Length: 269
Image (cartoon, one colour):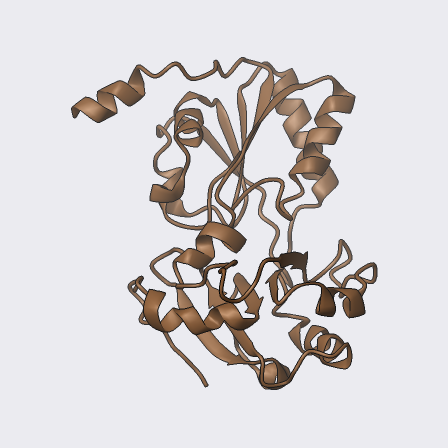
């Protein structure tokens, strides 16, 4: 073991107590973007309840004897209900297990971590939140997209492209969103992108405005599609999961586009 790994093994991490649940962000892609506390939890848990977005490489960091339970929800495919996932977490904790709820990105950034934590509170289950690097922040750095830049924007908006029913969020004031910030970062928006684009155009955003879609962010299969807001309605077969970025920060990709995964980037004008 190298010196720095030995130091990690001896670090004073908080104890992962039996009968508790840790809600942990796994980051946007590769294992290198895990936090140290997340890595520690992988080695201490009795059972890992993980999302579909958590990569096999990250799960492989946990000892082989640790039970792994897939609880991922993917659009258009049979998926466990959120209520059933939360019930399972509570049941496992009440069995005295150290339960690692491993979620892609950050658990509190459109990851429903707040809902799960709330149910744990009501059930009297001890828990800890371990933040992760969100795909809408650090993940976009792998595509050369700074979400803020002094030359382009002092504000950014994050939104989700669908609600709990899978439809376009009805509670979003699209007219206000369109005017509130130069840069809009959209999670889970590919399915409804034509509708969302139409809403933003109707609210005054320009059809020639840069729209960038980053699929499989920060992983070996990352691809980047560059287009415009006006052309968003004609896009087909966009790989998911993906993050959609609208706004002028796209101009910096020419300088900052540093990452190439195993799948070469595909850029469409």
